Amino acid sequence: MEKHSKTRVAIIGAGKFGARRAAAAAVHPGTSVVVVADVLADRARELSQRIGCAATADWREAATRDDVDAVIVSTPTHQLAPTSRLAIGAGKHVLAEKPFGRTPSEVLPLVELAAQKGLCLKVGYNHRYHPGLQKAHELFTSGAIGRALFLRCCYGHGGREGYETEWRTQAGVSGGGELLDQGVHALDLFQWFAGDFREVAGFVTTAFWPIAPAEDNAFALLRTEGGCVAQLHASWTNWKNIFTFEVFGETGSLAVSGLGGNYGPEHLCFSSRRASGARPEEECFKFPEEDHSLELEWADFLRCIAEGREPSSSGRQAWRTLQLVHAIYDSDPNGRARAWRPSDHRGVRPGAPSRLA
Image (tube, rainbow, N blue to C red; front, side):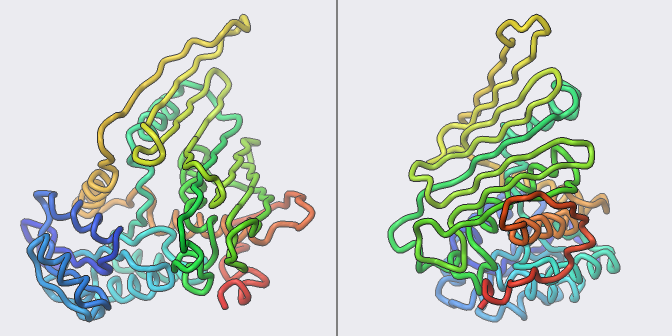
């Protein structure tokens, strides 16, 4: 691919999050947004006018243009893999929204193709770029709390009027429900901190919203080979928005709460255990600034392209996250944990056709 002073970008998908991705890319001095594509031509045109680029309703043309180096894919889930595949096949670096696809089998060929072509393939798990979580990860990797014993995450909201009609609740489009919407962020963070998991148990329920076979609540326990356990509850019936992420180690703990906006201000509390059993020493950090995670993620993506290295939340890592999702969907109905290896879950889980119908 010919070198240019700026990375030339196509945005595929001009919805709410695509517009945020476009804005994050447009403000970076190393980026030139060339075109916005959306099957709704008016929506593509409106966004293109805001950031000063071309617009088209032909996403295939936009993803394969000669004057494009990288493609941001910000479509509903069922279109993420086919759009990314076209862009990678045309030699473009790709940043695709999470969860990257509906099943592991949809995305593995893309991971392999990007590796063959030497392209940067990143999936948009922007929570890794929130300041509280970044600071927590920095402290954790420095050994501040010792070996991880367990992790815990609660993430959810209560939906909104008409939520049951939105595309993300339609299993054929989204591939699932809340587990594939917000739960995947927690699974990605669990792996970022604790590494690979080897045992999985879980339940998914449709407790309130009339969206079956999609779920509105997901509960999971995961365990690494070294014995670290992660606990997840992702919910669309948590009537007050919530995000908490905690890591407990041998010598202390890290607790992140809030993501800004309706989730409340972002905080991190770092506690150090006292051998005497006295109250732990605690240091708290506040992050009152606006959410800049998308800008930080985009800047990291550009650095990975320039340096030729695998990005954080790479396509391969996102494939493994999808494997975890389907291992949870496959869990023993009696709640018994079972051994699991990533290579065991390359395809669609048993019973998935009803979820994807």
